[in-house]
Image 1 (cartoon, rainbow, N blue to C red):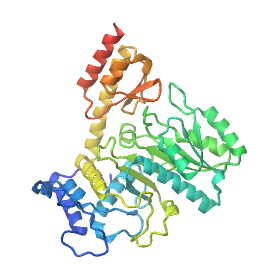
Image 2: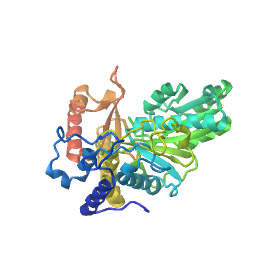
Image 3: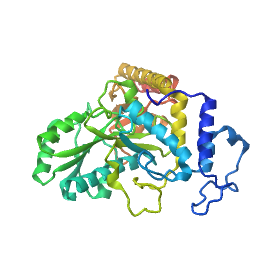
Image 4: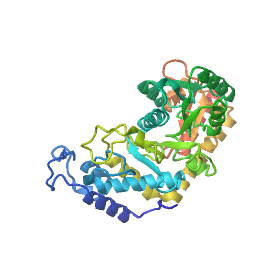
Length: 411
């Protein structure tokens, strides 16, 4: 690990307060050009306990992290907390996802949905600006298990979308149907593909193999860029499966999305967007000339406090304690699967993820409601119910759930 370490509480507090001191202070500094967007002390009480709560101090200070701080200049009045965002991005891109130092760009986004759409927008513009593509020649490709942000992005960008079916039991991409659909797309004039490959789907935690897409796309002569949606799996899979190919060390991977407000338990909404150097410039908003630096994000203004919250979590745990945490969750997930096996309850679980998705016909509706299980649909008869094993889901809770299931099975 080049950047990620565990820091004691005193060091974390001092570093955040130093960063805030390097930012503008709207209560004390004379500033006429920037809106004083710190939280109004008449409404949000400036309590003494904030001196011992540096993350809450940052929310009150409310720094604006507009721009992309890995590329060029940014608003100098928030340079202190921007530096901590860069530290977060170094940890994620280099230490977790194996990018070369200084060979990536990225930012803390207001959620994974925006980060995914940022990737689609960036690649659409890349193909149009760098390859001379026309919109009708570009297609977005993903599996039917992919997050709904991808169809949403296709709608916003007015691009065609191919959703490839997956096997009902294994949740793996159907390579035969992928080949057929790509052939048809090529015959219909598609030349460029934006591929979204999953590192932990929302409902199943299933993992796509990017090579399946790449081999078929190369066969049919597509130019393509591949984005990894690791919103669910980004803080799990690299630790439970360190030998995977889902990182920037794989030349197929050009960008990655991670959600910090899921496994990392950062405040909503906190997504993370990472990409290789030389790509994000394709979405430069040249009209934003009053913004210092370059506006290269879909959201524009965004909260620096979310970035500081992620920094605090990462440097509280450090890499070894985070690995330990994921290992404990894996153990609990295996325990749940063992109990379901004993009851002959059918389910899907990727062996390196902490999501267990059970077939709905084996779960009584009253039990699903009582334990707040998430269905695959709220608009009809569900086929699946899922459990996400996180810190708050203890073995005792899982035992209570399976004991109730046992009563149903033996009724």
